[in-house]
Length: 296
Image (cartoon, rainbow, N blue to C red; front, side):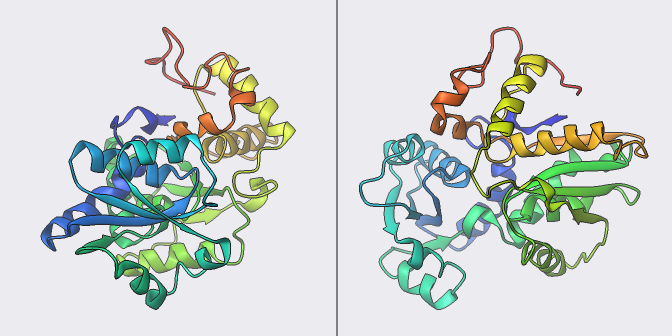
């Protein structure tokens, strides 16, 4: 397991990889505000707000949440000075409409817009550097497995891993209609239309952010055995999928398998009833285990 949750305190997991090239372009363009959008529990917005606060760069977000809604994530965003503009669910569905986004940005001074989840070619290009963390760009592994929300992390990995290595994405939402198309488009935008990846849609469960009783039981058992913290949206479904495939013998033909832990641990705070039962607690920290290597 590659523990990206230990990488970069401000934007842990895969988030800094998605942000840094976007931020570099924003600097070149002389942007005065970094603007994005997401939900009330967004790891992407959490990372962006933390980075902006630390670097004294104004941030703002169009957030899919009711005016009265307050989540631990949103409390952090406000504490770090991120300006929140609430959107209804119907308005949020227009987030891929360039004209609509342009109309939303008119109230900001020289904004630089980062799409939901950092999912553009720049975000994927940054995620290509995850492969650079591995010896020979992952050539020792026959299969690398990662969770997918937008698909940008998978696209970045697919663009950069060694030619013999395949990437398997585990979508955490019901995305059969569009995720493969979006990943292929990002790879085309990068000029690297590789075919070394595929998606397994069997583990999305009830949908994005939905935690079933079976998944809850898996999280508690996994964390007790491995002392590796999981987030309820991405890495829990990822590890559940890998565990299920292993037990079914579906990985028997693989020489070595690497699982990418993409972070997102701030999402634990949105499920206190579940994670208070974990040996790791809400924060995911457990004394004496933070440097432990995981093999499962």
